[in-house]
Amino acid sequence: MTTEPLPAGGDPRQLLSDVRRLARRVRLDQRLTWVALLMLAVVTLVGIPFDWFGMQLHCQPDGSCEFARRGVLYYWPPALLLTYAAIAVAYVRAARSRGLTARVLPYTITGAVLTVVFTATWLGAALYFPTHPTHFPSSVLVLDRLIAPWGIIGVALLVLARLERNLALLFFTLAYLAVALALPTNFGFGPPHWGIRLGLALPQLIVGLVLLLGAIGFRAAQRRQR
Amino acid sequence: MTAATGIPDPRARPGHPVTGLDEVVHQRVRLGILAVAHEARRVEFGYLRTELDLTAGNLSKHLSVLEAAGLIEVEKGYEGKRARTWITLTTTGSSALAEEIKRLKLLITQVETTDFPEDR
Image 1 (cartoon, rainbow over the protein chains, first blue to last red):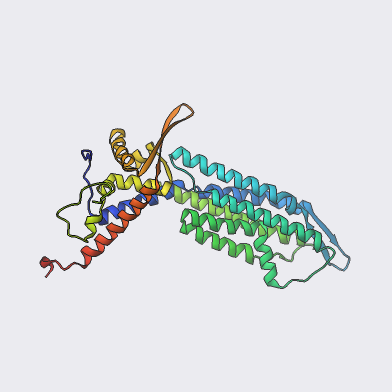
Image 2 (image 1 turned 180 degrees about the vertical axis):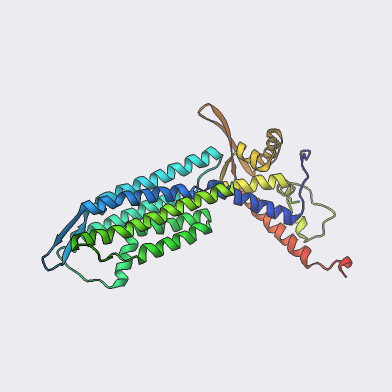
């Protein structure tokens, strides 16, 4: 055994407390939650005009309308995959600069897999439903929202919260999912063709702002903790 | 002290949690190194030095002890022109840390439940 330059051992309570404190410190230093939320907020807000202008909308004189959200289908799959890649790079770079490794890979893989699931589901729906009009119960519509980009963002964030053992992110994500899944999509104002576009754009604007506020909040919290 | 890394403490009673404490792991700084390496999976020398508030020489000594006991792996390399030393916990190190934490918890429980004469 070498000569001990520091006191060996110590009060077991103190030792355990030190272990916990150090582990917590590492977890805090590995986190970059606000960057992930900021990137997701930006991708959500930028997606609104794609949905608005990429929507195929045909309204009848009786006021009934048919629409297809082509903009969502073309914009979101590459945008989400790029965002998850950017989040992974940001986490890895930040962790390395601090002398640590990042805990982000399972999150980005989950995000990428969910993006593929969303794309396949929406492609299948775009090919099938025009020839097979169907009325769904509200439970199926909730599932539809969960598979939509704004829903899968939340599901993937649950994985990030677990990886980071981040209770604040867990609560934030649950609140986010409640907003993303419960927001009405028909706000019922403007002419029919405006109403549908607005009705679908406003929830995106709200979830985008929720993510942005989350990013600001987590950034402020991180600055306080350092 | 365990059979793996040292000599049993003759003062310790058989079966007492103290008998299972590994002197290599039980040392405060080394326990801190293992805890950080466990949480981070791979940690840089500079991070450990800052977080544990040690001099480079002091930290190196502790790392040598842990490396000799097979509890960590030390990997030296370069990132650009900057020399970097990365520390990774081995499977043995992970088990030793878990065992130490278990022993410490046991020790705390035992101390709390022991009826000392001065308490009477």
